[in-house]
Structure formats: C-alpha cells, structure tokens
Length: 119
Image (cartoon, rainbow, N blue to C red; front, side, top):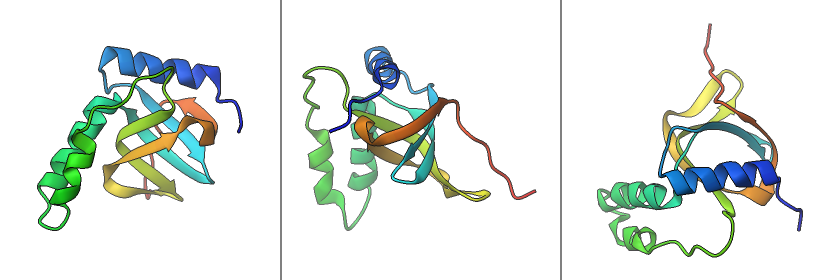
C-alpha cells in the first residue's frame, strides 16, 4: 500500500475541519484527470443522498449516504463536488459530478481546477 502524500492529506483535513467547499483541486487517478472543488465528507454525503432521494429508481440507496462518516485518523478520501473528468477538450459531465477518490490512489495533483474549451 503506497503512503499517501502528506500535503494532500493536510488539504483534505482542512476541508473537513472547515466545512468549506471552495478548495479547487485537480488530481490524476487511475489515468483519469478529475478537476473540481473539494467538499467535506458530510456535505458530500448529504448532497448524494438528496440526489438519490429525488430518483424514482434509486431512492432506496439514499439511506446508505445518510449514515454519519466514521472519523478515525486523517482523511482517506477526497470528496469532489461540481467535478469533471477531463478528456481532451471536454469535461464530463458538463454540469459537474460528485466523486469520491481514495487519497492513496492519487498519482499527481495540483491546486486549482483546469478549464477546458472547444475553441
């Protein structure tokens, strides 16, 4: 198991402690580039639960995300809100998505989010 980058763990811890979703980050994980804003896990879980609750077919899964997160030790995951997977000049999805990424799986990162355009 690789040792996670201490700087990214510290960033995740600050996001968790501040209940803020304003920190923009871009990461490479599994060959994918994901860019967006970090959110505290509790805020992220709440938003995913709301989306699932509003779904006619997936509503029953919302309860999984209502359970409080266990807080033992430093953060192990990044929780992206309004995030996109970058592929060429396109961001998928266009409106942004909710992604949970294990910090130990991040192979590269930078502060800020990447813009993209078709111009």
